[in-house]
Length: 213
Image (cartoon, rainbow, N blue to C red; front, top):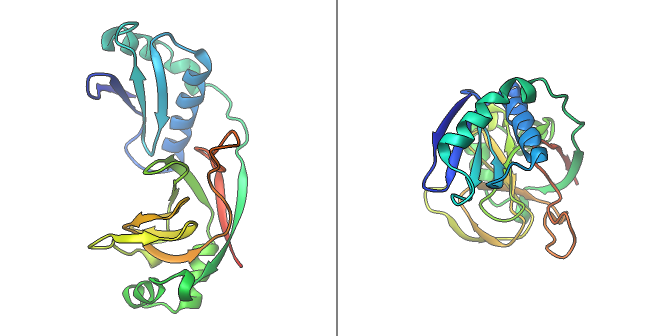
């Protein structure tokens, strides 16, 4: 575990070097344990691929004090049992008008549309982070056979529910928005509803599988 400053009101706790299951479980343990403690001076904890960002109130705590506290509880959070995660299946309509970048993915990978769909829907993905916009899940790992680069120039608008891939990740756009990922399908499942807590359908650590619709 490495701890470093992140701006004037942030602390980044690095919990692994590789993006793998072991690092993910360390991030999840640290996030759940510290969230439950309600440590004075911590205003928010944001988990991600290899680390957690801790936002602090500098009038109530400081980098040095909080760093020492976090180092002292490492054995405790590493020994904690993890609760079960939510497992969700997301129906997706692939290709055609729903997946305008399918032809590019096929050309880049040398695969047929049917093979791309089989590979993408045949894997299970972890929610490694939520960001970019409310409810947007960064899911991985993506099978290297369907690795594609990001768009050189982002598309100005993709529909709500668009399913994209880029590099070794896949994700779902909860709202109509600009997009830099390659869109291969679309889901009608609503990922974010600001009127109904907990607002986001998916949470950090959840397991997602795509099902051709």
